[in-house]
Length: 121
Image (cartoon, rainbow, N blue to C red; front, side, top):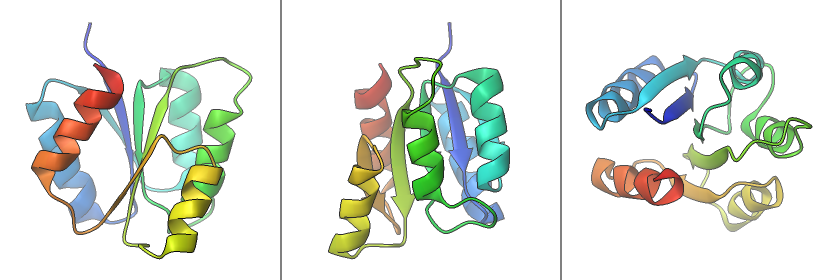
């Protein structure tokens, strides 16, 4: 069975390119444009991995990460934060929220795919 990935970003170009990249690597992909949509898809689909931006409308990435990690439905959903926020305190906040990995934009697609495989395969 294909692994499921939820991509959460409010930037359409990033959503499209990540969607394409993950599908090309054999994953089932869902996309969300904000935190509310992300949490709704998370509940319905139980993705294996969430690629999550921090700065989004409604509910931000840190809150989404916390909600996923403290979900009462025990899932093994991995959270990979992918954001432009590259300051030490941002990274620390990401891991404190429960992120399994933190990557900054701009990013290498090769490194991203390798990290995704490492986290869920």
